[in-house]
Length: 480
Image (cartoon, rainbow, N blue to C red; front, side, top):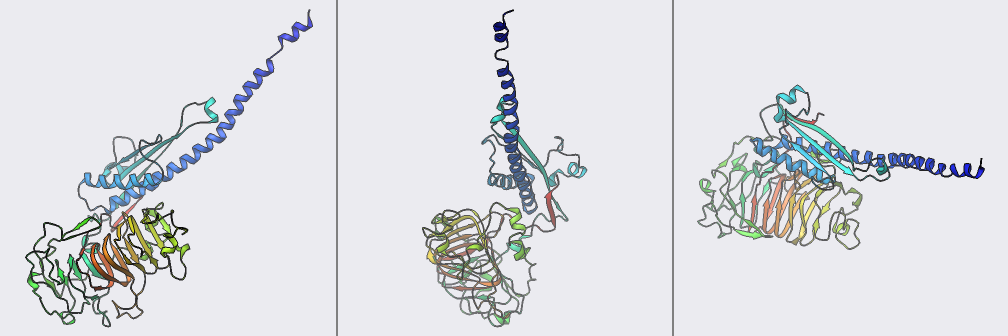
């Protein structure tokens, strides 16, 4: 036998063994790396699903709509936005999003008897996503897919679908002071000329000398009077001194069919808001549905919009959060939340004063909440619209330690300038709102301890009800 030939027959066997071992080694590495990637992706998908389910349940609880179709539209909008904010968009990068309301009882989503009996109280959310495989392609060449689903609910303890409009949205101006409290300064301190309130006013501590026009034939022709197109609710007629052009039966003006003026491209119009009466015995409205704890870090608002909630307290100094923090070229917040003229959508909280006083400042989908004061003044062409599900401005500043002083001391929120537009509820829990300037369109339902009006030529204040009020007599959450 030829030994050389025997040796040649054994040549190459180790290569085959190494190749087999390499496949196993790469597969093991793939399981570790790609498996870890799948774990992280699944965590993100699950978090987005749970957040969207909670947001959808809140939207269902706070929807004032009666029809299933209208409620479904509000739920779709709220849930899709939350999912998008968490990095997933239906039809993009392999993501598939399902938002189902009412829940389909024929699709085997759950065996819970309450879900099957009351599908209109439940919402189904499912997110599917994928990522490409890397090392594990030698064993599994297809994209790696993950999914998560959740069922959330809104159960109301009575037939109330949301907070009644009388609680939060009925009044263009609503004093939070109880009747008889404001003896040092009135809750409604009125001066200036040529401004119009399109809505009702609750001011049981009102005192002053306003002028109301008896009836303008053309609302577009201002007559330098203060015009209220709704009802005024006062606690005691002896505290309010009406002089000049008062006609209690004709406070409403003719309905305007065209714009009174325009601000930032938005037409300001007025419409009839009540029966034109002054009432001295109207019952006190219900308390606000939330307190300051609702808005603070760790509160309900942050849990509903975790990715939108930003605490700016780290930027507080002796003067608070100021334009130097966000507007100058090297400012720490410039390019993060503020791009030089416009705030990024979000909810901004601070423990100190917040100053928004630069010309042309804008923010669409923003809310500013502070333990201190909010100053929007010293400039023109401001334009702010509230974050969906939150007021526009909230202040917890106490204007005066004297409980009888309702419109004096230091303001809690100040709006001062020319050609301004604000849309969204405004709340000053313990202080007063100061309004100065001209050409202002305030599309807000304002609740504050007191109000101080001064010099608002060509200004219109309209109470525009919010689309998402906080929950009342209801519970919501994720059930599965």
